[in-house]
Length: 440
Ligand code: FAD
Image (cartoon, rainbow, N blue to C red):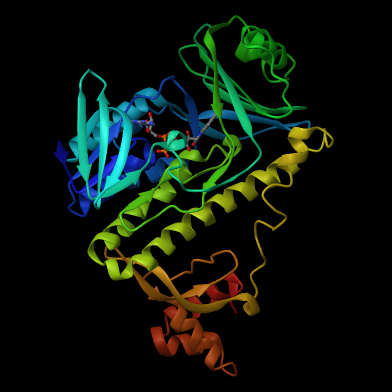
């Protein structure tokens, strides 16, 4: 039996970011992770890469390919606006475990097959990857096993059931690139690596896709792919390698993501469908502030409710923001309004706009949980429809008291009031900034 302060189940981007953050706070941390069963390739944006750098990933980032062009065919139009970096997940995940080990995390490679809480401690039974069994025990648990994490009695909000079917193809070496294309029953993501590996993925509605028996699935997918405008360069001269792998990609949100001695992060707490290509970014976003939540639950249990509310509000906020981004993108596709795939997705999760116009009447100030010195505390913040969790500082200036000061003297110019508090050089600049935000 090995004891540690914090036991983290799952060593993907979320578990990895939390592990490094907790090490920096001085905790002993064990991460248990097994390799993913198939070699997924995913796309990553620049801001996800920045998030990984901020988390302290180094070896993991070496697995990323250089940015490659991305073409999108949506609603009958093709655009080539941006680039993405391909991430082969197996080497990326291996690099991540190496980063953890080098930064003082105890890394255990194996499969957790049982995890129980007893008298305030969690015990995990692990089948080690190179044989044998290990039991790990800790007073605090971080659940980061991604979509594979058991629900453990936590109820979940689920979106439309979605599945992604993916297959590798192999052809000649080629210029790396990716493409997204909609079709009447879903959308495809196609990726080409420099070594000629191609990754072809169809995302479909579970209820209406009418999938054939497994033995006919290869032909069924090929027929759909061949009809796509963008697929020719990905399929020409190439052949499928291995069988089709199905990944669940339905949106899911856990209604509770923190307790007094446990927390869920990343896809284990919430996952949206892969359309946005932001899964890793979201996983990191949910994980980067989690060490402060864990630290507060351990060091300041009297602030447990505040810390749990902070974490859960962040998880829920991220989930609905990305779900609405997805909904609006699905709604831009209007060629097949009666097909079940599109009908369901352009109205989920709700009809609330992604952005609500910020005008002075809807901007308030109030107390909200914030992260300060590695702990969750309460602070006076500015609350807007776009930032319901509040905005605390701008370049070190606490914004809520300054906005309140401006509002307390409506007859004076904001720049003048602010100058009284922060000086003649900064006052007018901040007044201008507040006006641009719609606060004044
Ligand atoms: P994961 O990365 O899933 O990490 C969890 C880890 O826990 C894994 O290493 C797993 O092997 C391990 N584990 C699971 N069970 C056990 C167990 N019992 N014992 C030990 N270890 C275990 N995101 C993007 O940014 N870009 C994309 O292009 C993209 N495409 C996607 C396509 C599909 C079809 C899907 C389903 C998702 C896609 N995502 C994409 C989302 C992305 O994969 C996840 O959001 C992200 O990896 C979540 O990180 P995580 O750390 O929470 O979980």
